[in-house]
Amino acid sequence: MNGAHWHLVFNHLPIVFPIVGVTVLITGIISKSEAVKRTGLMIFVLGAFAAMAAMATGEGAEEVAEKISGVTENDIKNHEEIAESFALLAYVLGGVSALGLWASFKGKSFASMVSNGALVLAFIVLYFGRQTGTTGGEIRHSEIRKGYLPPAGDK
Image 1 (cartoon, rainbow, N blue to C red):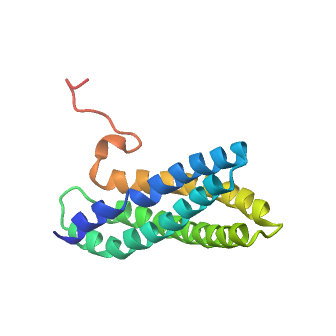
Image 2: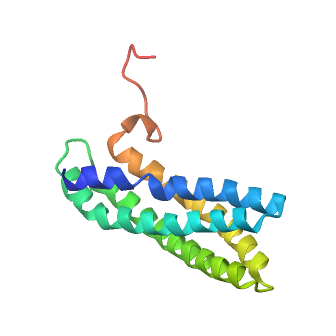
């Protein structure tokens, strides 16, 4: 497997984990279940680790992608810049979630505030995750680029 293949193995996880985590955390908040909230927070922590793996494999993917016809340096650079912001936010979300887990297990009075803060941060992470996924997809999928026009005769 080359660098691009490894990146493809990992790059969807940091986007999927926050989606699942938001769903679980909201369920825990609505049902007032500490166990379910903890599960949502743990999913955010796992998402931070997945972001580390995606970032660690990004350079290898870039080396492969630069040699592919039709792939532009600008597409790679756009993806790399937004991915760095996304990863940083995912790491912060993972850290806040770890704090929330600790506070929940220790019965701290501020545990719910941390969970709610993690939820708000998770929505920001989701926005950047969407941007990262889109710019990554645009590297090899011209059909999702802005201004794409299908070849004549295609519908």
